[in-house]
Length: 323
Picture 1 (cartoon, rainbow, N blue to C red):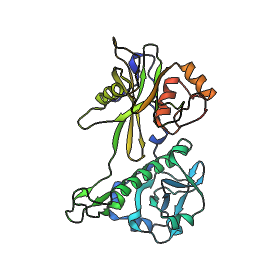
Picture 2: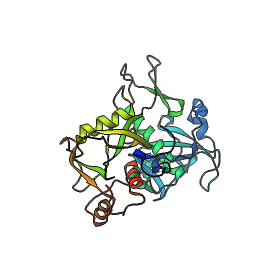
Picture 3: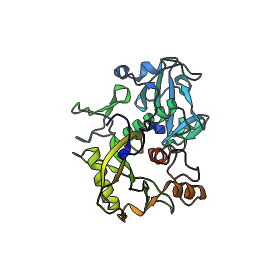
C-alpha cells in the first residue's frame, strides 16, 4: 500500500494524505524504556504532559503545557509513561530532553494552572509535536486504565518498561498496548459523488464517512468491501489506501481508503438501521453549500474523516458546524 495515490484512475497523482493526528515529532527512543521512569524524571530537562479525565493541560488553546518534572513533586511512577525525546530545540523543550506523560489525579490537577484541552477539539490546531504527544499520551493512558488486571489470571498487573508493558506477577507474562485497526472509506460513484452517512446516535444533519473495525483474519481491503455492504448495502471494488491516523478513543488506528461502486451493481444505498439512519450522495457543490448553510454538520477538523472528505473536495470546506 505505497506509491502515488491515483484513486480509481482519475486525475493526476495526489499528494499523500496528512491527517492532523498522524503528525509526530518525538524520537520514541525505545531503548531508554528499560531503565524506568525514575531516572528520566530526575533529568532537569525532563518535561511532563499532564492528563486528567482524558484531557491534557494546555499552555494555550494551541499548545500543550510541558511541565518541568520538579514542578509536580513526588508522583507515582506507575502513573507516568515515557513518550520519547525532543528531536530539536524549542523554547519550552530542549533537544534530547525526555518527555513523559502523567495521568494526574483530582488533587494534583487542581493545583495546576492552564486550560484542559480535549484532543478532538484542538488536534488540528496543535503543532506537529504537540499533536503527536497528545495522541500518544492519551492512547497509553486509556490502555493503562483498561489493563489493571491480567486477562489470564485476574491478578493485578505491575507496570514495566517505563509504562510500555504490564506484567502478570503470577505468570510473568507481559501484556503490551493494543491498537484496534479500523477502516474508514470515501465511497464514490461514477459521477464522483461521495457517500456520507448519519449515525443513529448523532443529531440531525451530522454526516461522516462510513467506517468499521477490521475483523480477525481479514485484510484491510476485505474489511472495506464488507463494512460498506453491511452498512450501506452497496458493493465497492478496488479500494485505494489513502493514509492513516491514530484515534485514541480509546485505541483505534484509522486506515483511510477510497473505493468506487462496483461496475454493474446498484448505487442506491440502504441504511442498515442499526448504526446508520440516513445515507446521502453529495456532489462537491452540494456538500459545500449544505455545510455553509449549516444544513450539514461535518466531522471535526482533527479527524481523518474530515481530511479524506476535503481531499476529495479539493480543498478546505466551509467551517460551518463540526460534529
